[in-house]
Image (cartoon, rainbow, N blue to C red; front, side, top):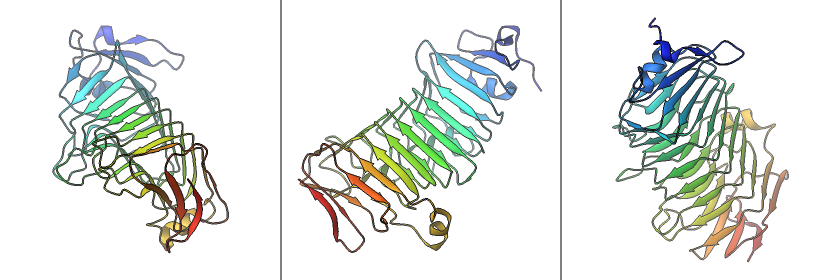
Length: 312
């Protein structure tokens, strides 16, 4: 295993981890070089700069942060998957920007997560990727996103993906983040057992074509609260804001049968279209709709189209 240069090996925390410094003027020029030498407990600090070098991270319990602004990774992918690919966790990422992820199968992501444990994003920026973040189907895992931006993802001439896609993990949390101008797909799609989506701004705008703002296809348990949702005139689905349970089958229903509480509250909506719908084909009596401030017409329907609630 390579040893880090002297400037990259200053012990900085109680666990004995090292501060690994990365940047154009440093001994380690690229995050990919840090990924090769990182040890459990290390903190990787990369200077604000732009690089076209992907990285594969296999070390658990590390922190990666941009310094002096965003560290920008663009126009590259590893393993035909993403700008950065993670096979271990827990990991915390902050002040890093990801763009231009492109692969032939139209699911190139800023981040692809294949490991167990928890992945945390703070103040990250994903834009003009085919997909923003993709997480696997491992139930032992959780993903936490806060204060981050997802802009103009779904960057394909035809359908390619979502701003955030969580597979069948245990828990997804998204808070105080912005989603804007997504092309087709969903801004947020989660198959997690528990999804908590609070205090976000999800905007289609004049040019966005995303179909659903939020999609929970396997149902599960969810809290969707205090989000501002704007659906633009070019949306691929002009009637529905949120879809829940439309892909649920016997296998996924068995996994989530004890966790099927939905709580939707105070979801403001500024409508460019005439109506908006929370499509909820398999919601149960444990579902609560509370509209809060709503513009336009918003209604909840089941699969047969029967109205559950309407407010104008």
